[in-house]
Length: 366
Ligand SMILES: [Zn+2]
Ligand SMILES: [Zn+2]
Image 1 (cartoon, rainbow, N blue to C red):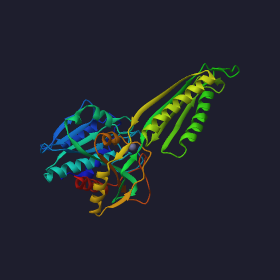
Image 2 (tube, helix red, strand yellow):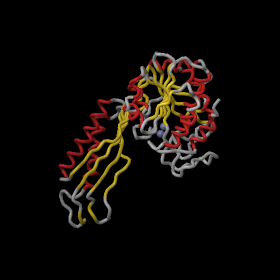
Image 3 (cartoon, rainbow, N blue to C red):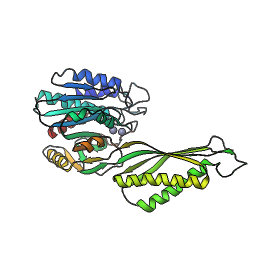
């Protein structure tokens, strides 16, 4: 039997960023190579698929993500990150250890069912799931179900949570830039001030957004705005960076148009140039009703506790798998302390005692 705690600790010490999960990949392959029952597939990037085929029937897919974050670890644990400035602050080390635990159990128990185990790079904003699907690899398989879990510091160990339908939001990055002539503050004039355009854009856009989508399922916000270089020079460039989150694709597209229209209107008014750019898009995670009911039934027969989840405005690129195949993602409680630390915090440390629970639930979902 695999020592999942050791595996988790080993992986925790070698956090790597999106598409740079080279040590992580070698580590996982070194374990998978011990199972002749698996057919291992690698790609020209860091993803891995372990195929377990027993007959010509349909497949069930399990996915774990592999990447870490540019966060400086402050957990003080004995297996702290050995890569300064990087940390498994989203618990993907746990996800990988759980998937390896499931593989080991499936093989030990000689399960007679076709399975695909996906180790996916670059979940944190760089589109790893999309990249894996774009390889065309999965088209060779008839995939009936896709499962994934995510650790949660909000839930205690022993508790799980999920919902049917929309769970994680559509998510897309936004950049809005204004370019002007700039110049000495003593000589203002039309076409010179990019900051003025940026500020006016910000106000007009949110007025419009509020009027049209007051309380509906949309969040759009700018977390970053940058302009100017000197206190007495008119800024020639102003950039706003933000994100758009939604549960409704039609409204999502409308808000993108609103961003473009507003930027154009402002640029015309202040005689400046503009550019609106959109970054990586993550499809919403939509859980299948059938798999959700299956999940609830499975949990009912265990000692674990189930809680109906709220939908979240976070992005999760398992959404791309759940778009292609009936899918289910659930939260796995990993909090064993009184303090609540959660994802992406420098002192977030999911409890090892949740590893076996993750394996057990994955296995029972088979
Ligand atoms: Zn994350
Ligand atoms: Zn994550």
